[in-house]
Image (cartoon, rainbow, N blue to C red):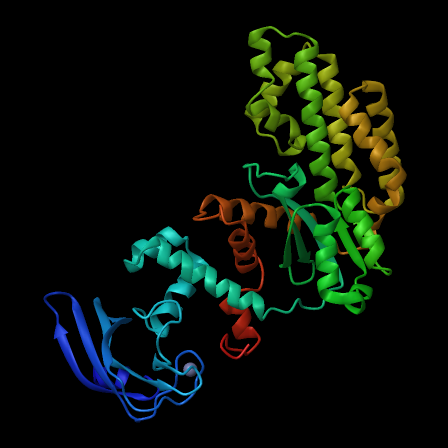
Length: 423
Ligand SMILES: [Zn+2]
């Protein structure tokens, strides 16, 4: 098998190969196998030939050598455009005439598994070229994307950016992430965590698909609740463990801060209660290391109020260790009594908000909701954010979440037995 056999380009044949091995590259000159040319703009058959220009487009590397396809791109008169136009070349990237589709696809598939900057280093391409290819491809995939049918979903808010833009509220700096609990894939990402964010998803899938939704797991976010009530007549809303604990931890942290402030602790004491301590406090008792236990005992020794916080926290974890909703409810009520006695406003608010909605926590016990899912997705999104390039573009960030945690990727396309170009 020669190099010429390796190069299969529709409508072209290899005329000659030039191996510049010392310089590290190979040129593969090709020529068309037919006379007809199609307008690159509209596809109409071009008439006559009006000049041509030389193109050199990057192809898949051969061993460690870079390889380029070189050819003459012809021009002709397009009767539809009524202009001289270049001919359509099927194997060229639409983004850049200096890349072949084959090479472009390799870059795109690499961006699924590595950060843009790493792909750029690895391929020697420009960072902005790699970024643009990735973004354009994701846009293409989304335009053909159909949300799969779902029955059990989890709705999460994810903090997307710090920077404040004109006319937006804090809510606009979040995304709403919709995950299918069965496939564990993110099926949609919307702007903002306002009601409109979730409405957009329900509107996209339509009333029939909404009626099929049986369980929606979410946090105590009133906007999400309102949206689901409005669109999904058959859905039970569930406050799952992850979301309940997340809001509890926020309230607990507020209480800790207040405590430090209230008692005007000495500097040395204050130091003990901040930083890493915040993390140790929020940890389940049986998961603490010996070292963490010692640190905690040290602080707890002279702080009665602090012991209350610890008890309350363990009690909250306990709610989700019960196997049935009745036992969990008793635990929940006991926890509530302690919280009211302890008197921290943030914790009281947390409990008062949940109490009338106990049914939604109870729903957790009969449904296949696992908190690991939301937690996992939250963590993955954090890593995507860290390896970000160009996430000042919020739309790209959204697409990237759907690529890494969802279905906008080649694995999904393969599973669907569908090629991108046919989708
Ligand atoms: Zn044309």
